Image 1 (cartoon, helix red, strand yellow):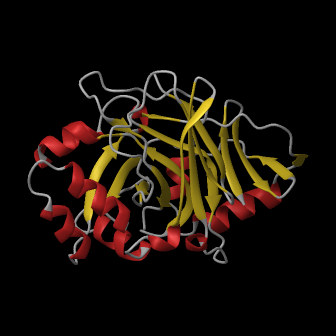
Image 2: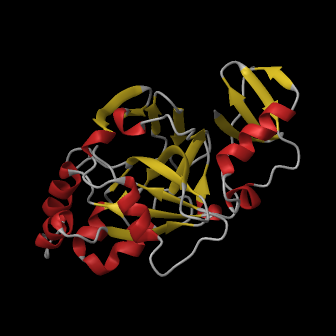
Length: 273
């Protein structure tokens, strides 16, 4: 089942059937003990419509977005290459018991499918990072998945590890969508993959793919560390890292179009400005 946020409210989709969810509150939903069962109950109780074109918007409300870093071998290599000093920090965290976790964004810093991302004006090397995002309930249970674009300033992070917040957090720094793929207990999303394509003036300037099975750590491990000594009363999104890294020297430019696809979820498309 997929959960869509639209300008007309929230909708649940099961195959070719669509159900409007009146008065649906994502914050309250993620505070429940079993959000997936509650969504199924509401879907059954609602009138069904045939699926037409859905205009997805940002599928979140008050949730924070956090991120895990250096979870792919390719990401470790890229971070070590760009770092002007302390490159072995990335090597060490890849092998360490404790993962790298950092705050990424609040809802007002995020955009949904079709909405523009923003480039920092004090960075010359900005890249998209296509990632699987976990949607986690207040009780630490993984409820579903979506696609996340973690824009990153590689030159700022590479200059000094202490600049990581500035390399990661600004207005319009993160995209989520197009919808939430709800975990029904039978889905093994790690068998899937993500593909990214970047177009400039209608021409493809970069393309890449990776499998989620290449993520070093288990999702349960990442969630357990995220919930250590902190709580998320309305749930939280966790980006699980990227395994697709554009070549050195490539940077996004205003007007570029970014398309990320996970077959089970759909396509997240954004233009940058």
